[in-house]
Image (cartoon, rainbow, N blue to C red; front, side, top):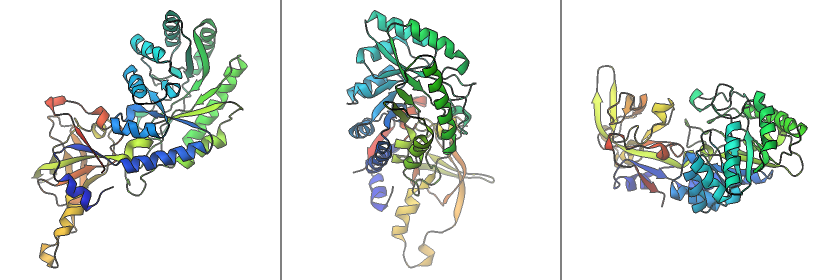
Length: 398
């Protein structure tokens, strides 16, 4: 991801900024597409993970669809070249305005999350004399074994329709003249690294499609969602997720019938490793119990560690790549191999503005460049202007 030339380039750029390695992004997309195409699977990119214009353009160039969770995302996807027949609109709280945007765009499908939403879409489609294609999002009550803030497939979560509501769903579908049922949709959570979880999901999908067929509905699309995790601890060793293993689980355990399409909605797995947040050390504070590195980036630029208690690898680029270049044969001038522990914190007036505690780093100094790795997903898109901070910039690989 980094080397002396790249880090030297960073020295002349104002921090903080997101650095995007578009080459790695393309390699990741190709690996995903190759693995999915092997089984004829369809992949939609979950735009909520990152909607940086150059990132979107790269993803669109590989022919992926778009999974959107707002009307603006629907509009941005189509404006960015994604084919409308490859755009799906998910989300538990779609407004009338957003539904109308998607209806006017004639997107592939709405992923519907409640009986009432189904009725609203039908009414709005009827007013436009349109037919809305829908997939019913079902809550499979499958534990994704991930952080409780990003688990979405349990009965206690707000997402999807629970199994005891299916009879009402079936009745509503029969009474909605401007709705075309095309399939069923699932999403159980994010940052899932245990592929066995997806085997459990396949079993539930098989059960649910049988239920719909037994009740007179033809299931054309099986949408298994996404959630495949990435390696936050070892980004250089595992820069590309195991797409082969991921898709093979569904090939082996999903009962796909002739003419059916299998769809996925991957976000983090496609973009997370392609970017890092680059910051500078403003101050080094030494205490009796704690040492602090105060960076010029904080929770306004990257809130994942604070919001989800997420681990993200922190690296001192200056000490790793630039300082060794100035070493001589004089042992007294060589950088020390020993490391110190620092709480790496931001400048925001909140005690929660801490990237990580007790990080073992080479002795660090004011002006050192720091990288927070694997920041391509839910990084730049969640940035804020709190404390009237400047909007975070983006820099791209040359």
